[in-house]
Length: 164
Image (cartoon, rainbow, N blue to C red; front, side, top):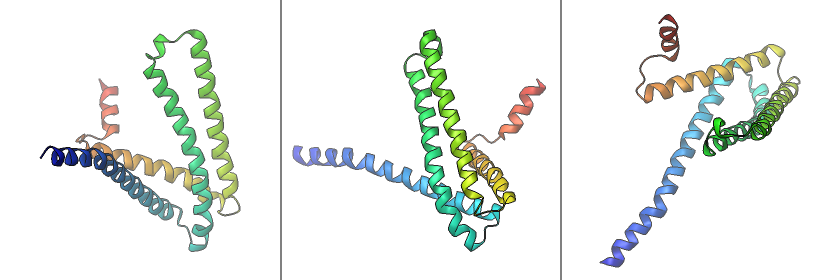
C-alpha cells in the first residue's frame, strides 16, 4: 500500500509540471494562430505576400522577443534585489545603461525588420503592420481583463480617474 501511494504521488509530481507546461504551450500556440490570422486580415496579404512575409516576420519576432525578455529579466532582478530604492547610484547607473542598450537594440531590430519587409510589402502595408500589432496586443489585453473578471474597459477606468 505504501509503495502504491508513493508511486501515485511520484507520478503526480512528475506529470503535473508537464501538464501545466503543455497547457501554456497550447495557449501560446493559440495566441500565435490568432495573431497570424489578425495580421493577415489587417494587412490584406495575398498568398504570395504571405509566403514571403511570415518567415521574415517570424525571424525578426524571435529577436525582438529576446530583447523584451532581457528587459523583463532586468526588471525582475531589480525587484528581487529590493527594488530601485535599495540600489546604489553606481548600480542604478549600470542598470540604466543596460535598459538604454536593450532599447537601442530593440529599435534597431524593429528597423531591420521594416527594412527587410520593403522588398516583400508596399510601404502602406508595413505601416499597417505596425498598427495591426498594436491592435492585436490591445485586443489580447482586453480579452485577458474580461477573463479575469474586470468588466470595465481600461480606457473607461482611466477616464474616470482623470475626471476625479
